[in-house]
Image (cartoon, rainbow over all chains, first blue to last red):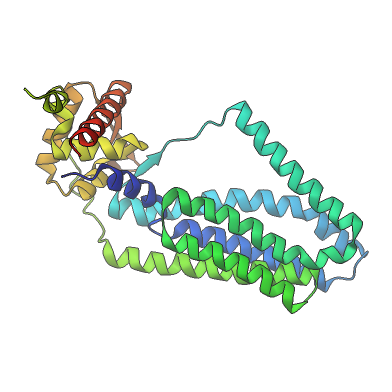
Length: 212
Length: 102
């Protein structure tokens, strides 16, 4: 008998089967780690430090752009030729959902700002908070796609965040260390998935095109 | 006919066939998929897959688009609105039948 649910789930998981998304996201986290580490190297209040801070938005925007490019480029060369092309449905979020997301984001941002205003020592908790927020985000993906390695990555994010905070390396250095370690974990997870994927899948013979 | 089985008799036989059911299940969660992906996932031969796709296309359940990615021919398959509705109805009916018969 055909297990419909299993087939549907496997199709959703296919997007992550080659590990390319994790590699791209992991590299972005490593880049972020490098960016924050760069901030610790220049003296606070210096023009170079101000320039680095101003560059943050550019780093984030270009990172998002590069992730998409990276994934598309390598999927075309590696995945589609081996195991086929799948276009996923683009979710169109309604205005209610967008407003809800904005409110949640606003509350989180305002809470962080308020806590920081109340106590500058709160900065020391940034790595743990970052770890928790990303753990929740990765956990949501894990629940949606049902891949065990994402549950592991969610746990790793929380553990790394708390470990870096407990180590007391400081706020910006701590954030840098958190992104460096978590980025490495995500990249390694992606590379391992890619190796498994490449071993499992042979390149399809595209010289004899399909015919319907 | 027992009432339990009556629900099954009304089931869409075009989708009920295992290979076509697998195809509909795959296409129900994506925008479109190419021939290679469908072939690998269903384990069908090219000829068999073509035959099943032709039946689904004839019924208006899927749309097939032949295109190129660079110089590589690409056959894209997507579920039509009618196909999506038929698959949803099949799924609901079959689930109901399984619940009734335990």
